[in-house]
View 1 (cartoon, rainbow over the protein chains, first blue to last red):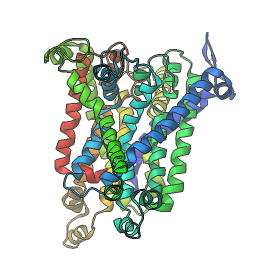
View 2 (view 1 turned 30 degrees about the vertical axis):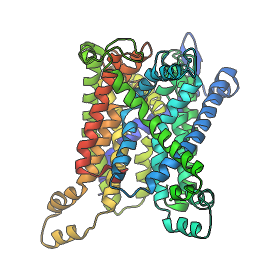
View 3 (view 1 turned 180 degrees about the horizontal axis):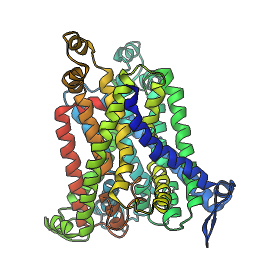
View 4 (view 1 turned 60 degrees about the vertical axis):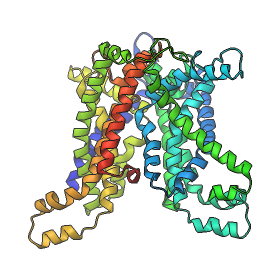
Length: 276
Length: 274
């Protein structure tokens, strides 16, 4: 029986673990414009990423955008997740599938949709001008705003599905009991629903934060060529700079942050609540 | 119910409803928009459109990068699913039914590809492929085999996750009964266990295929001239312009994913899988 796991494990070992070890080793090499990669064993690339203003700015921008998007997504997703979690109609499975569907369509397609919405003559500008809100078309494309909206659209379904699963498991009687004892709607939310959805909020936020950190298509297409986040910066190091050691170091940093959050999330919350 | 409670203050109720509508508007707006744009008569995307047309679909098919991208993505997704799902299913079976130590750790190990960011895994594979090419003196990057190998990494964890979930809920009484009545272990597996795993396997195949088909992050460093997947071809095109031709290609992809989900949902209740 145990032999059945061997082929799958070997593949993961060869195609994921091996390349990750190789990547870490390469991140300790050095880059020379003439020889490209020089064998070395130094943390220089990591030091450069942490101290060079160019990389510092990319890392800080990525963290800032990921944090902001996670927070906004949480606020936007909670009512929808509650609505979905408490839904009892036969449409429920349809709503779940509809929430899942955009996730499976892919980020490139969805970014393209935002490009059509945000263009100078796009729907957003046309509507705003017709309503007289603005007199000249807004420049939405290639701004941080556009990227943030694009990212939120990508991660919202994950947050809604994670939260609604937890909210569904909160007994409704608790809400009725609180209301019977005179708590207002807002009080029921703050004192009953929100505390009990804690594990869902934590699991969803960690998942979403990690996804935001690793945004590629949305950042490139809606942010334009000069907008920099970590994932596009990694890609650039390999394709434009041909600088493997730096690319490997940046990729490894991205991996380390992702893994730290994922492991922290699963250890701290999934164990304790068995829900996430 | 939150609605009923907040009903005491109509302002709170209004805010909650607005947030729900906004959330779903943000989720669906880009998808709906790209489908609508594909029918615009004029090439430059502007509102309101002067007329509607289907000509961009023909135009999209006449562009070799999209047609070839579609074929490549289809081929890669099909092969990765055909390889990854059986391997993942075998592993899932061993993890749930096996009686050896470290099964929990093995399951986490096989799910690891989901936790590694696509760009990071893609970068690692890119360097691995280039160095292996020097060593073996043959092309790996920008070949179907290279792309399929990478995408098997998507199929395995999805299959393990979904098939393990479907196996854990199974009652073993039917298998024991069949064995007691003299069925060989292979017959028990073929006639009882496999049919009971069907929903997990079908869902795994759908997720593996779609995850591969729409994948950008993992693939973009592994493509090359003549071997470009559809999402990479779309991304390259979009860096210069958004037009109804691209929207038509995107709509084809949306339709394909939609059909796959509807077909799968007939076998498995997708809402129960996720």
